[in-house]
Length: 131
Image (cartoon, rainbow, N blue to C red; front, side, top):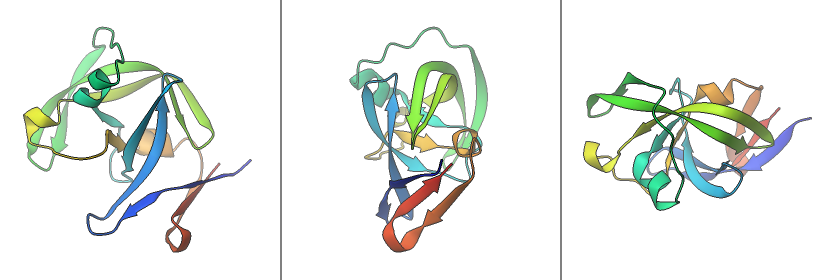
């Protein structure tokens, strides 16, 4: 079944902001990034929300606008977006502030989430059909 969800269009920054729920309780604003292979979350946002991160399950190099940085990979017990719930979902975690990334959103929702279902972006009413 297709799920239609709204997004906030920050045209001046060319960003689409969506709501994501993490671990069944924490709602976080994330930028929809069709150019990102993996979902990336700001370490500071997770810590401010009180999300306990188990030990990193690995590291990988991530190319950012400020160059290549190392990201820890953590497993979220649950990530929920537009009717889709992913369990034990790996995400890249980067300290945005330490790498001079200043934003009012908690990270980037990448193709690892978006490729789970077909999706269509509707700019005329700032919505996304997913499913």
